[in-house]
Image 1: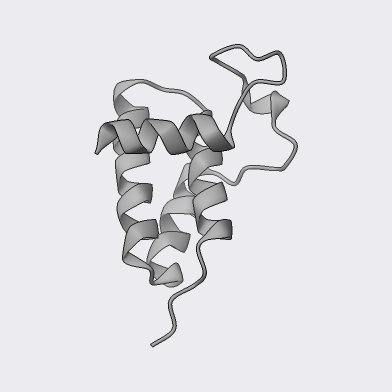
Image 2: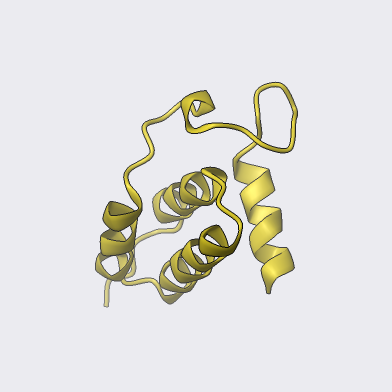
Length: 84
């Protein structure tokens, strides 16, 4: 599972210089705070978005990297909101 998360992280968030690590200032969009992204996950209602958000927050706790939060934002924007 962590390999899938890492693949999504790297696919949606890369450093403009092509390096493996980038700072928050290198993103093209404003990435909301961790608490805002966490609050958005259950409102989205898609189980994959909720699980991905939880996993990315957990991984960020172990290995802090602003790309985790950019990946959460990308997933929340790209996966259609579940209505049902």
